[in-house]
Length: 73
Image (tube, rainbow, N blue to C red; front, side):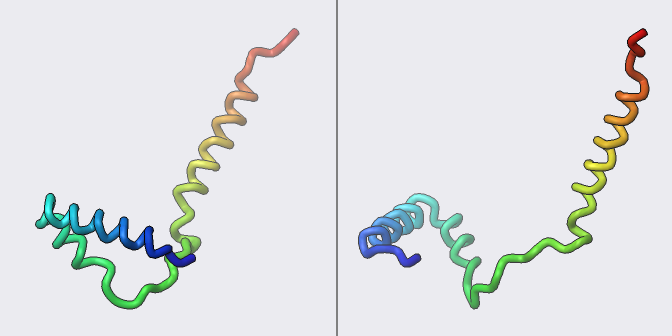
């Protein structure tokens, strides 16, 4: 979705004000984002291990709670 002319003007004004107020930070930001835009990184199986570990820990905790609960007699 493209920006309207008004939206581009507003963003340009914000960028100019930012560069005036924080020149060092603006220079640092201007060094990033150059070049070809590529797709975002898609997580692989190696990146999912923390979620799997948390799920296993929660499952074990739930089983322990069920087994160690007070018996209703």
